[in-house]
Picture 1 (cartoon, helix red, strand yellow):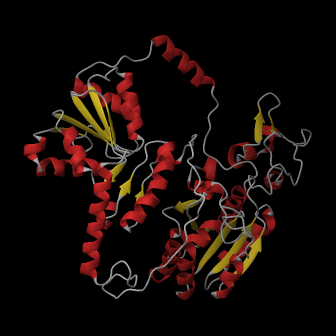
Picture 2 (cartoon, rainbow, N blue to C red):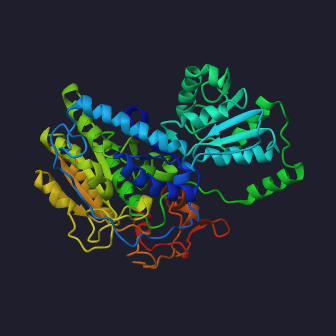
Picture 3 (cartoon, rainbow, N blue to C red):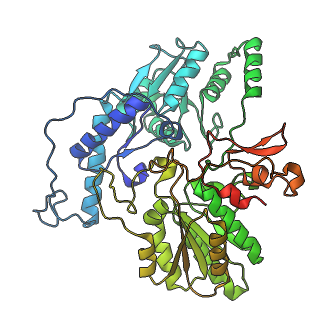
Length: 505
């Protein structure tokens, strides 16, 4: 995207750089009068670490919107896309200015010998993988590493300087061979300055073109290219690791104890089975995406899962296949955060086109999957201000949809409402299942019920349900006691929702 849109691209290698590059991205944006893209990779986004903060500026810059020039003035004129030729030329000039600043940036650095046998060019978390791999192999005196924090436009002068040092170049980067392709173009454009090189990367198969990289993959590539043997950890150490791994309990993906989504999908499954027409669910992005997994985790309820807002659009399309003999009930689910972010346009389209779908909002009062960031359905903004909440039900009613609400922990009522909606023919029907996330600040530590299994009433394997509670429902707080051969509740993690009592035969 950065290359296509001709905008500067920065890639942090660690937590400190993530903080520092973000600050510099704003400064760079001010200098070049353009958007600056900051790219993070999975390992960076799903981890945390300490950073050193700089001084907080005493004077807060004043926001401004300058619009006092003619149409042809790209900086002070109206903010529009025309004239295209002039704007495109300016965009390229901005990129050129950014490239000149990249040449002197401290976020690009080289570590290694003056004349390496192999040069690694890398960016983002792959810099850490490369450093670790070189250290593991004891090749600090033979392999150099050029880390680029500024990857588009490429700092050409800097690259020319280090590409000259050796014939063998290995490019280590995540996912697409972005740097590899552009560095090869650079080398082909300046053959006299850079010389003939042998490149190793994703294009020649040194690294896979899909998935993440790691230090072991970089080390394996180095051993093949440099023709050295990697000393694996001692056998005794490997045996100890196997012993530890054998006793570690498995941590499968699942809904948390007391998660309202577990109850919601149990209700949806029950209603679809009672309906008997092989209806299915189109899902969306959130914690509830786990309902697409195996029956033991998410009951295998969701059958499509693509991107935020896609579930309702797909469901709307499936529902219009009735003209071709399609008569299965179609259900769409999304969370409250996703509803505000991406679902409303698809919902309006479904209502406008008379799509016969049951749309279920799993409203757990927060953006639970990524850390409870505020959304428009809450009365507190991202900066802590008290703000008016935008009601999901009123939005749905405003477009003409039939709207009802229910508590997912109320098994009988919720299943009945879903069943009724499945049977009704006609337009869009909306059911909002409201129950706060078990991990939300308002609920954490609070239990609606104190749940215990009555051992005198629990029949264990003689129940005839084939351990429905621990084998199928599988709330983490429900445990099968092998000694007593009965279900028990782990009171430490039980959230007290009471739904397990409702599903017990």
